[in-house]
Structure formats: C-alpha cells, structure tokens
Image 1 (cartoon, rainbow, N blue to C red):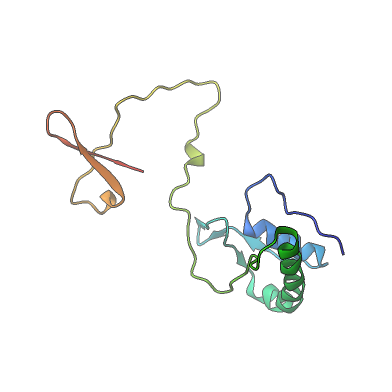
Image 2: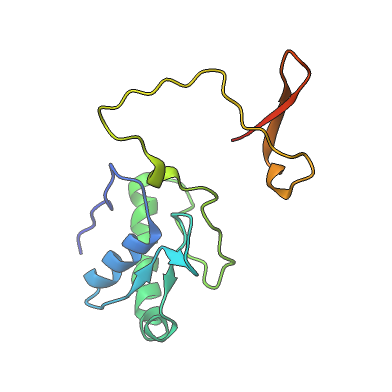
Length: 140
C-alpha cells in the first residue's frame, strides 16, 4: 500500500476528500458541499444515506489504516477523525459572487453601512459614531 498526501497545496474540502478516498477503495460515493441550498463549511459534507450505509464499513476499515499512516508520517498521537450525523455548519457569507473583475481598479475610502439599530441584521456588526455624532455600522 502506498500513501500520498491529499492535494497538499490546496485548501481541504471534505466532500472532495471523501469522494477521492472511496474511489481509491474502488467505490463511488456522491458527496455534496451544499445542503438545502446553503454552502457547508469545507470540513463538512453531505452524502447519500443509502450509499453511506453500503460503504461505511469498508471506509472506516481503510480510514483506520490511513490514520495510523498519518500519525507515523506526522508524529504525535492524534490524527484526523470523521464524525457522522453532525449538525450542519454553514458558510456565513460567500462573497465570491461579488468578486471584482480583474483589470478594474476601485478605491473605497471612509465608507460605512448605516443600519437600523433595532434591526436583527445589526447582529455581528460594528458600530461607530462619526464626527457629527451620527451612528454608523459596518459588518465584518
């Protein structure tokens, strides 16, 4: 058995890892990074329950061997783990749709978004007063 690192120069996405891992075991597993139209954090994914029930045992047998290889290669006593049926965690904001086209230079200075303080949308926003005492807020 030979081991290779999973795309060491790219960000880890569990859906891609699970798909590749099961393919190397000779199985097909449909994985998704989206649930109910919302993007999951990259360390979670959704799989088809029927497929997972069929692949669960061979997956975990190979995953245990992979964990041991990980510990030997990296040292230490811990290795990545996999938790089933975890509560979904969604990406809060995905601004990739709003990315600025290459070649267009935009300069933004002293810009704040004004929000109604009584609004539920102000949670997680920072508030600041300008020189006239007007309260301004912006979300991070």
